[in-house]
Image 1 (cartoon, rainbow, N blue to C red):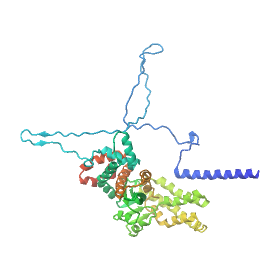
Image 2 (spheres, one colour; image 1 turned 30 degrees about the vertical axis):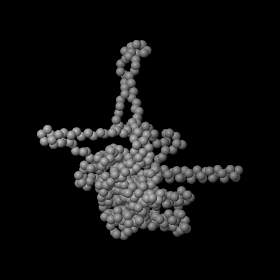
Image 3 (cartoon, helix red, strand yellow; image 1 turned 90 degrees about the vertical axis):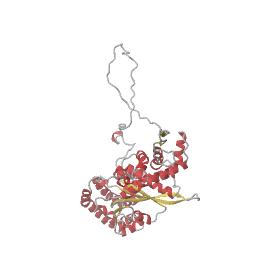
Image 4 (tube, rainbow, N blue to C red; image 1 turned 180 degrees about the vertical axis):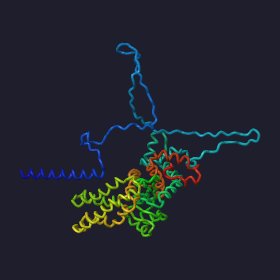
Length: 456
């Protein structure tokens, strides 16, 4: 009986712990699909209508009977049942043959002929649509070039990986003027989000790779009610030395929202740039400790931080002035309370404990974490930059490494344009096709007057 009672008590405690964790996950992630729940309690799974923008083909299936099969009477219209089926039309290659007839003058033998239309890549038969498809495939949908080559071979066209690689580099070089426009736009004075991600790069002739870096800078003030279009700018560097972000931001002034990477320190010391830290980083360190060994202290810490995020959810999309007013009235007191509470807990914790180390990180970043309480444009965290790197992280698992430093630079150009398309709800392949087709005919001042929302 004692053993049974003990077992039942342990089961009950485990169930209570699981319930507490599920409640915490629900607060953090929102309502999620749970197959164990009755259908009435799940999120609605009603089928969404097919987009009205898709081309439609109507097929009418009329009854074979000309008269009533039951009595032989005449039939009259009674209505119509309509159903829809989504069909996929496979992409296909097509050759565009351009003919330019020559005309000769009957009097002076002068020859007249239409000029040669501009090509995206000189002396190449690749059209704008094919080039856009290749680069969007690699940098947005992530199949590496060798896999694309195999797909095209099945469709009857031999395009080697080397050929696709040359085209990708040529497209990146073609789009560099717009890449420069993005840099100027993203790094306007104000606020910018920054982060970086490691990228393996192949060492020439050795067969080995070294770790390079892709840096990302994002201009996105939509959470503060701004109507200015968001944009992202990537930069490649062969290593992670602090000189690289210092060069990228040499002409920038304003708020830099980033992680605690030491390479940014020189920028803050210059006085031109204000450091804003990331609460998500601080929370993640506490959450990792809590996931391994939950305690009352880690539970309360996460609850306190959750209250700060709840305020942000309420003011998301409001003007910077409205956000600042709400933060001063509600978030600032909670931040001070969190600080005082952590200081009290630190007196009871071993400084070698994981919880104390997580709290120490938060306290070290405290001033930078509080910047958002005094600036309505600043975010509580740096998730905007982290989200911009998700595509790179997924792509890296597929293409594995960049073939050279120039390949990394080309990737930065294409990730910048594709990322900006996505932020502005522009379909990347469609947008790139238009730009690749027309950019050589644009005057130089067209680049300078383009803003990301109208870029594609």
